[in-house]
Image (cartoon, rainbow, N blue to C red; front, side):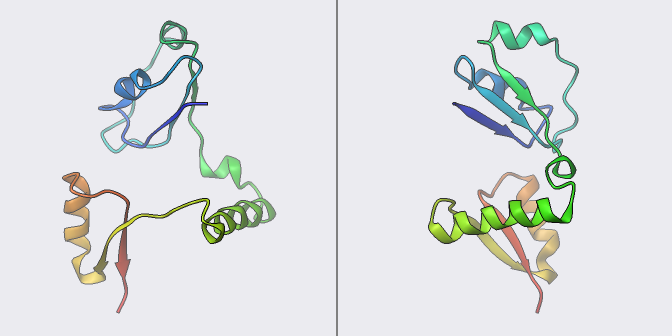
Length: 117
């Protein structure tokens, strides 16, 4: 299945839908550019019988046991090389403001980390 993950929201939502093949799925999980406007369900069928979900962490880790299970899966995937992490840059905590500016200006790809001490 073709999947698009959109963490930006308002400014990229429709563009993300346009990236999908018929019967693809879009996972909308952020509002960095603002909340997405209401959409008509008919739009999903017009663009190819698309699926749309808006997950929240609380629904996928409702109990401590479920959180342990899901975190364990992620850590195992990293260990097995099935999930690759891309760390763009590690900033000292004193440069947190610069990290935020780099993120907002879209100068980064991957994860940004703040290092304490």
